[in-house]
Length: 229
Image (cartoon, rainbow, N blue to C red; front, side):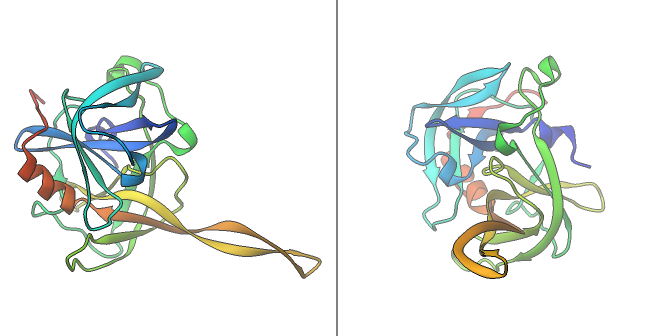
């Protein structure tokens, strides 16, 4: 079961008339916003980003914008206000691990869908939760580790967290949702190739490890100082 701590950390974002997902985490009692690079491409330092709240778009001021230099589809935004409660959560790269075939969950706002719960979540909507297993992953080798889930992804989950829960109940943010693998399948008519194709979702979710984000947050010390739990 995904705990409320993760639900309350996940936000619907708006940038350049396109929406995606992001999530918060803390390093040294400073809070940061993580998302996929393609969700915030072109976002400038000391600007703002839209966050869905109370049925409208709240403009949240950000400080620095860090994009992975390895080409990984991850981005780190420093915040100027605290967005979520800070109940403890582990991050990959901070001693936490995950395993092949382990159950995993990913959160986001597919096709812009969201669950409004009013002040139960301070006006922020609750994300959708989907699940699968860790199907494969690359070994870290100078670039960012890629994590594959056996699950069906949809547009709108980009930038959301991929989390696992250990047998002892430890919640670990493992990766950032990037995309899903698709295949161009032929469209046949009476068994004959029409020359047309359609994109078929292969059921492989692609994510990038949060380790780079965690390491960068340790160096930056630029996020908002958090208060309370």
